[in-house]
Image (cartoon, rainbow, N blue to C red; front, side, top):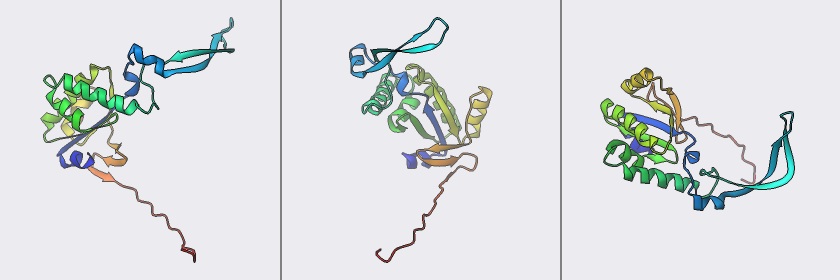
Length: 186
């Protein structure tokens, strides 16, 4: 994915903000996410008081930490892409091929395609109320669009564990060699 991303002239990254929590659990699946917690109440003077009683809660949104959460997020994004393939052809192609968890790591060949992709991604992900954040690109034209629309973007960001400087358009890899003295037994 990283190689495909950098083989393109224009690279774009963004992140689905709190992506897991944007997915609503079906009513019949919510009982599988039950958990116990102390009942809390407010006293007459407005202080929070924890009672001895334990109550049962359940998640209504997909929580972090479940073994199935990454799969469910990925499957939901792929289903979204399938549903809107005709309406947003550029964005759906990239969601199917260039997504890792909630990170979108995308490459395009022209500024025009990059701007179209940006607009399609916003519209497509709005169907599941998934806000996109941490935008980054090496395209000056797309950065200009973001400045006009007051979209915050980064000039240096992490892409799948590597630091990417968009101004210089290079990956910066910090290699720190660990020097260990060998003992006689080694």
